[in-house]
Length: 143
Image 1 (cartoon, helix red, strand yellow):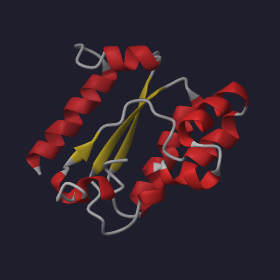
Image 2 (image 1 turned 45 degrees about the horizontal axis):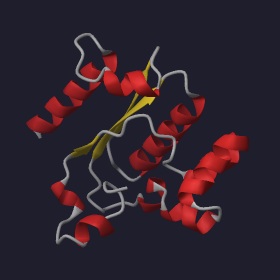
Image 3 (image 1 turned 90 degrees about the vertical axis):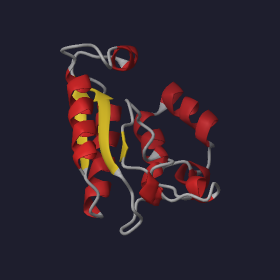
Image 4 (image 1 turned 135 degrees about the vertical axis):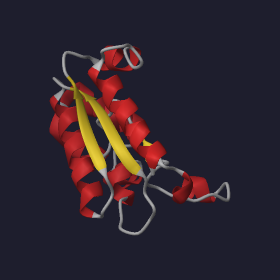
């Protein structure tokens, strides 16, 4: 949210231009209304308890809502669990929305990972998501 909805930074006298890159790790809440509609059952109930039952609230808490051209949105490296279809779909759709407005966005599936291990293994030598993060950060450093 902080990297697409500039209200958070503006409230501190800052702008999105201060952020060089964003690395979300395995989220499926880039477009909450779409996520709620796609998962159903208990998972949908969990999302509505966190983000609200009405679509207006869900959109307000969806980073994709704030993607727009010429906002200085930083480049993204989106990590997700490779075998988690909802997270993969949300990551791909969010990356496309970013790319459509000229923001660089890369999607990195963590093959053989779950939500806990994709987080825990960041920094472990030989870990593919870690390698992608280091490459992403090195690219930012060179800009």
